[in-house]
Amino acid sequence: MSSMTSIVSKPHSWTEQQQRDFQTRGYIRLRGSLDGSALTELRSWVDDLTSWPEMPGKWMKWFERDGDKRTLCRMEDLLPHHEGLRDWCYSATLTDLVSSLMGEKAVLFKEKINFKLPGGGAYGAHQDAPAFASYGHHYHITAMVAVDPATATNGALEMGPPCGRGTILSQRSDGTLSGEDEMSWRLEPLDAGDIIFFDSYVPHRSHPNQSDRSRRAFFITWNQASLGEVRQQYFADKRRLFPPECERQDGVDYGAAAATFNLGNPIR
Figure 1: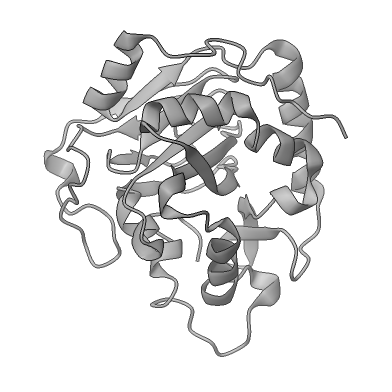
Figure 2: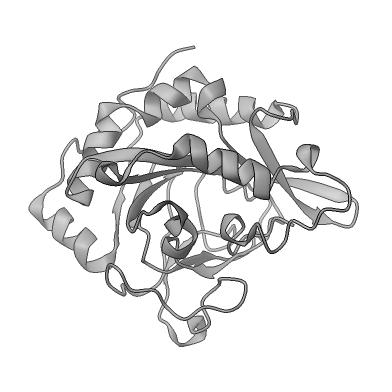
């Protein structure tokens, strides 16, 4: 299986203005970051992953439910099982870009695909920081890589106003933001191959997919290397507290214990 270590084709370094924009807004968008061959390969990988069966102890698949109907929502813990994705996520190209934004060496925290297929549900307004704080970390950066175009009708990401590094906003009991109706929100439509880098404090949300086209996106999250590499521990904890359906035990309530692993999303 081939690697895609040059997936981010431009730019290979940030301008001073881009750095300032990221620090001011909490996110920055790179247009056309994947060239044609890289995007084609990434899409083929996602198509392949979609077909993988549910398998206890391996990759994790979660679904949205409407009665007895299940719609694929998310896959996680993919790198041990996919050489190409592993080479890409650990590539110096991506790591160096994120480290520059972070101001120190970055290490991989987690990876996932959100599928948001036609009819897929909304993601409630939230910050990532509260959900990622269980391991002594206090700052993360995530790259959302658009596999498909993201539009107003299929549930593109909406970014809230920057609130400053270290600021946790008021939350409802489910972890979503209680003051979202008073916030200004900016829709960030993406072309396939665009990437948004955003920090763990900027509020974000997305509406349901009301179109007949998928809004698949790959998410990669990094933390500060100085605070430790915990990817394996994160997925071990998630598998234990919020396992995929094929690993769940009858009669076990995974609701309360899984709250930090199921923040604002339509998985049940």
